[in-house]
Length: 573
Image (cartoon, rainbow, N blue to C red):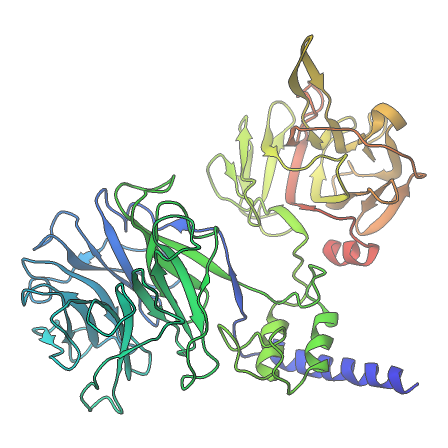
């Protein structure tokens, strides 16, 4: 009874805190890196574009470039946007007051937008400089050299100013390092004070190789930088080191991994103040999808809030936080961004609550809300789909926002291979409206394979369709062995229906769902049918006449597991 009461107390606390934090406030969790995307031809040129630095408000991106229109071999440029949801505008050169006839680069904008730090060769050696302006609408003043207390005769580059303006990090070849170009920091007590002599960041950060191209997070607890030290993926990689407080020493550096690092080499990291994005340059590429020379890229910083590893963020994860309330427990210390604050508290619950009910078992999700074009984008992974025929985007009138209208003649959507039904459990769902008996909503395509005796067809199957007699929901998955599974629920009545198939590999059962309710399940059986085809949304497995769907399809989702009945009901409602 005592244990039960304790569990109830935890749930009450979770419910109260969830109700509070879901009503307002914001924070960010620890992160993993999402798929990087190129900033595109408006920002990137056909030459080299380096070392991005994003302003605190996220509306201005500073960088240096070799593009035409420069005053020297490398100039500082800035691209702006009206909101963080808008596209970047055409970059603008900062002009001859800031830029000189020699190299000027690695810009770093202060939090108030009134001071811009950069390095320049205008004095004959790479020194750190600063230019200021009265307001963000004023012109930049003549740059000022930071002087011999900060600069050395050996070359000092790549400055990054902290959000509070009291620490300036940079790279230098000066004596007192660990053999290569090292990372250093100079500090000052107040904004009105002079900078103190620079201090080396020490052997946990620096190595005998070159460290350069750094950024400091808004809270001062995470340092991201580039290094060609051993343990990377080729040339210079992006690495990260953290500390618990701004008074603590930096911990050992960790490589950010293959999601962002390649054999080409990456540098110039810039962490957005909200902790949601990492900007960087790929400086010996380009990667596929680049625009020539060195390009600027952006990778999302994805929160890690699935504390128990079941790939669903729910009350079980909240209970883990409550169980460790007030402790220094790294698993739960997910807020504030990016590495927590050394104690499990309300900041961590705020972060978790913002991601409640997210499901990381979702491997593909086509919202079908596009307004134009021949691509249906997968918002989860890498399975963007291609439209065939002339399906019509419906910007309104879908079950969830827009939808895709298919004509029943030759319209369909095609994906690459996603999964093999013989390998494991999966679930697939969609909203539909319309159709006639015999039409197919989702199928896995037949494929042709080479065998020692010649080409052979590896059959796909109908995953979700309307049976030929009266339009009842059916599946043909595994039907070459066990026959189709048909329900008693008609789905071609012109009403919106949420339909789904759950293939439970462990129990060897197929289950069909309509509007959140299980409508049929078959007896268990053994075996599975190998298939390597992609999916057809709105057509049968071999694109036969009569299988093309006529009506609206919306919000198609695939999960790499057999979802529970409770989860399916939640999705449908």
